[in-house]
Length: 237
Image: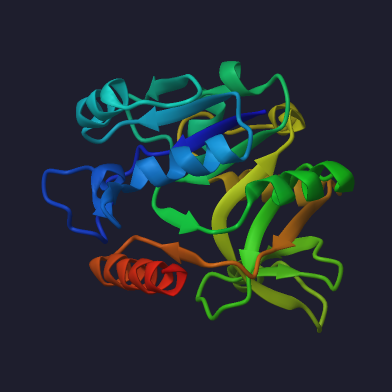
């Protein structure tokens, strides 16, 4: 299995100055180091990283970093989004299931359990989610089959009366069958591709995690994560 880290974005919420968001430190390490470690632990044999904003800085960090598996970078001349970025890296990913991982999240979830759930379900993609308040909720039925994004209801998509609202955690396991779908050229959101899959009746599922997770997209969240790390370390002493 391979993994892909989405690291091409500008990170405007973080206001990180000259540093690209994946190199902003959280808990004493650049965010992307946590992402690589998670994918290594999940058993990925190769990690692909897409780059655009300040690509040379991230490339330099990766070149100087020790990793137990090969790390390959794919450069985007223009931002391609989460969907377009995956399509751009297709040649590295289409041989089997792969993990897609946002560079700005951390989790204590063992991703091997996510992979196992994906493979046993036969889904096109399995999305790691948790129960939290969010303005960008995903909607599922009682068996965690994805119904869509909550905001799609505002665009005319109908949903059952009773649904589960869950927050997306920025980690997917995706079947290479994704590349058989009609993909828009250039920029695209992976969830637009998922919407097309749902409209064709293809199954997508959720995997509910109760382990620690955080989006590190703001300074406040980085501080909260570092406080959590400090508390976890003191409990282990």
